[in-house]
Length: 140
Length: 300
Image 1 (cartoon, rainbow over the protein chains, first blue to last red):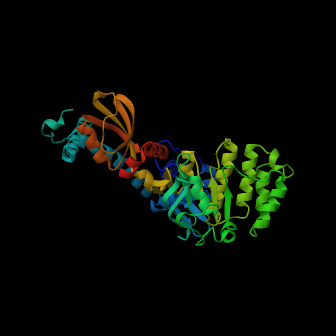
Image 2: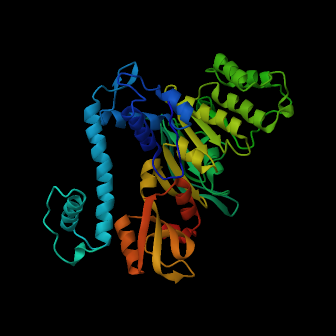
């Protein structure tokens, strides 16, 4: 399985593994029902403590991406649509968190941001209308 | 989880020099413990206490619930050890070294030893004194793991070795833990190795434990941010939770602890803004913590 670990970017290793397996599933490189490598095998391949693989597989199970069969191994789940929704939400939520942090920094409230999102949407798509956002905060 | 090692308030001095000062350290079954710290921080001294090679001046040391000084056989038969110096009997041949080590360990797994000898391509008829540095480490590693010890202790196992032998050592750690959940404690200067291989990390500084915990928890407590100020600073500006700063002029890279919110406030107060933040790497945390004097570390 093609996974690369980078210890210089500050992302916990189990999370790097989780993200990359999710990507492999989402892009169809890992198919539903396919078995993930045994813990020992992947730990030897990546040169990481086996407990990190245990943790990563546990996260994948919680996220519904994988399931384990007792005594056999860990397999890719069938339920891809649900995974896709959760994954899509996660990606967008990360962006929203960053946006809110920056907004706070620049003295915008969450309501300001909501209004500005609608405005931008209206500007990009003339078919919809949006209430103009009030106040000085709206200018760049 | 079953407790394998329990060191409590251990102090040890050599003459008037304090080597360990109130060190507590615990290790549970099935986990990998990484020990980091500068030379002379006390890592080797701590490990030698676990093996019963040194006696505690004050405090207690228990391995498998036993005192390694009073019951060396009970402890050492269940422990594998590779020292940084890799002291091996020079005059023995590799196969004699294996037979010799086997005699001390009823649990010796001859087929595992043979498998490792073959995978390392070690010549059993060679004398220890004829081995290269890497081969010595490999021979020492086999002697340390072939009895499948419940606890594997490696003191700077990668020191001075090339990438291939380092990989053999990391493989041995993975196998020890993955095959029936045994325990590994290793010290290392190579922080990326510690970051990959450890479940728990302990940072030592001048005979004390300055930071210890589950690796991911330890890392979560620290961030690295890029900061831009309105004015130029010739010296790093004082920021509340900053541990280390690099850069100059208007742009600085800062390793800091605590919440990002708190850090932003102190940056804003100096007329700056946080451009970007991410979790710090173990190396950044280590350098930030080890770079400070002891009183500062204690105050933090």
